[in-house]
Length: 77
Ligand SMILES: [Zn+2]
Image 1 (tube, rainbow, N blue to C red):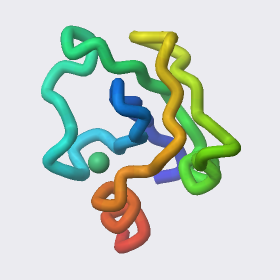
Image 2: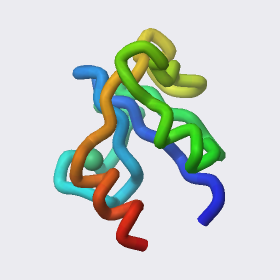
Image 3: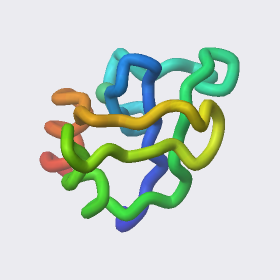
């Protein structure tokens, strides 16, 4: 996969859909934000000084950390 949806939790963590137990069934009602069709290289650059701002859902959210579980799953594939 070259692009993915990146989910952004209210705690500032970025997740990939279905890759870990932290993923919520319905990000919309859980008040999460997300980015549609994000480049996977973009995921790798998410960090404290390069936050990923939500483009859908809760626009107030930005991820500054990558979920370790999602990151591991991604790089195994
Ligand atoms: Zn995760």
